[in-house]
Image (tube, rainbow over all chains, first blue to last red; front, side, top):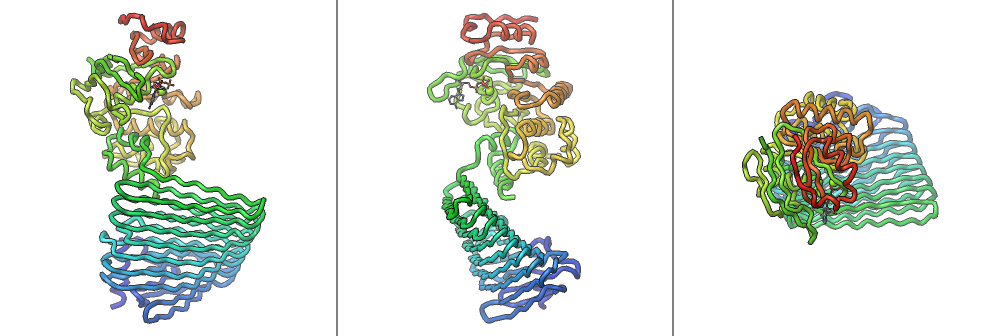
Length: 309
Length: 244
Ligand SMILES: Nc1ncnc2c1ncn2[C@@H]1O[C@H](COP(=O)(O)OP(=O)(O)OP(=O)(O)O)[C@@H](O)[C@H]1O
Ligand SMILES: [Mg+2]
């Protein structure tokens, strides 16, 4: 029974991310039920099913370097329902891991997907987290990811959020990052919204220690009546801390986009920059592709596909 | 036989006359040059023939293979076989070189894309998976644009300043590509103010203040341009005579 659900979850993702080897750690959660899992050495996992949520604690032991990625597959095949994942991820000193989360809601009409993550990247540890959402065309999903990240001295954290297939529905991301000395973080969100989709991104990065570095990047395309608001904040408090906020939004039809980059520097030797570009598709790009025979519509699609890649 | 004809084209942008009763015939299979000083209207002529938005409100007529294409949008003109390369090519964030080059040809393959990259002197393995963004130099983007045109196999190509931003070594590759297009029977219009480029043409037009004021062999037009064409107002009165 549960293997059927696991199969169907992966099938709805196009089968692309199905773990194949025994060396790969994976865990599958349907609604608030754990339906499959495989564990590997060095990674401690404690999963608890609650009535309205699933709690999962991951500890990657000191110095452990995982060979393959840890695959997390979250989803709900039903039209209606709720899923809440409470993650506590701790990457201990010197350990390294790549997590890939796939979230699928192919039939959603009225689904709430919440994620609350507490992430600790230990001293000189490395953690990358990639999250891809695949939604159905009707957009009946409300996605609410929250994360609180602490990067200890020399730790590296990279995260990428992708929602470009299917309709968004509503997405409201809120991430907070505290980065200590010599730590590095990179956050990238790539989202495409149409119909009445609503996209809200709120990210705050705090460069607390010397030589810490951070980049917040959002590339968003909205069409029809979709809306996007990007609130990116980068605060540098220490000597030689460096940061950059980059926001690109392509707007078509009656869509609306807004970018509110906030940069704050509280140390004379820190440096933070920001760049925001919001507008329609660049006319030279468009005409170059049209002069190769692409219709205006096909040209716009290709330009947006490039920007979101 | 003329593959392209412009008849009495007037173009005005924001109150200023850019093209001024421009009439010309471009013979099929020839490499034509349009030479003229800065601001003469060369890029505007290219944009007008291509049908770019900014240059669509014109008086006069453009005929391609005898068909009036004046009211067609750029993509419809491209479908008929007209294409162009920009003086300053666009940058495309994230768009891969192979996607960009392949987009104008329904039967493109990695192998064909690699072959056209080689034709413009770019090592395929080094470029094919990069993005057409500002990590490429202007000269590299120009050559990638030319490669995309080679793969498209058009019938008429407008090359706006094909030598600008190109170093001497790569310039030979550009000229080879122009020769290759000519060998394929493609009509080429080279837009330039360089004598070196002019020498690769079979026939030349001199453009001044939005008008063709002379035409003939590249030698004749080149001499004229070099000796007398600055300022170009001096030639308003010059009569057009064909030199065979
Ligand atoms: N969008 C525009 N708005 C106003 N004037 C324009 C516009 N585009 C071109 N022009 C003017 O039209 C004239 C012709 O410009 P065009 O770019 O066609 O010249 P060109 O011959 O290609 O020059 P160059 O050798 O510098 O490339 C110039 O005086 C230019 O300032
Ligand atoms: Mg020009």
